[in-house]
Length: 278
Image 1: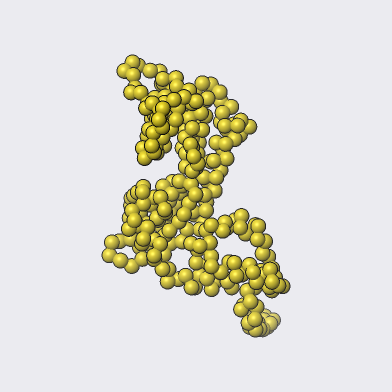
Image 2: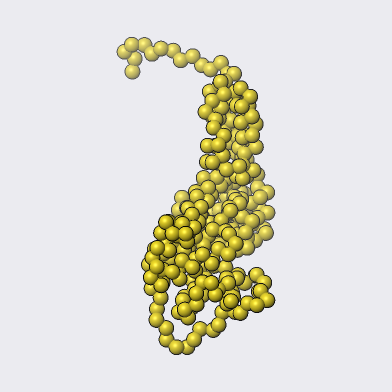
């Protein structure tokens, strides 16, 4: 068994995979290990590249894009599947990329999960304004289940213009100064502390808005939790309200079309417009 040690990035994995392919080393002979993992007792490190000329490895560009996307999926031995698919395609077995194939099915399932997690980051991340002297104007804390941050954060760089911001997670972080996106892994503790301890002054207003627009008559718990997973509630301003609002709905509030305090208001009568009025 050959142990391949790399830094955990897709770029370094790709370089190592190219060497393995050129040396005709099959997937079952390889064990992938990031730099901070301990070697096994009977593992042998990847041998140094031979000096002889080797034929180039040619695979579809789209396959590399698919492998890079799937590499963001957090799972034990995530790199073994990627090399197995790459090996099979390099050997001429193009079925390895197809959803009907066992490896291809797992590959596309991981890609789908990564894209969905990126959507979650775009939809459920909340920036809080920050007043300080270091130039950062907004901060946010997020807890993704896959390594989507450096890729998905480009969404905010495109939409927030020159406004500076920072996103911190338990594993990594990004900072935008209005021109450049800086990525850090591991996330600096100072970034994490700032993102987790910043209080949004508009949080109370947002909660009032959410409660007033919550419609218990249309509550479907399974659909709601599918579109807004429970794991995100703790980091959303309205998250603390959701269990109570759902409880009210199940206790009979579904007969109202609005939240309780809104339904109790008398409202305002709108007079009939006079004929000929503009």
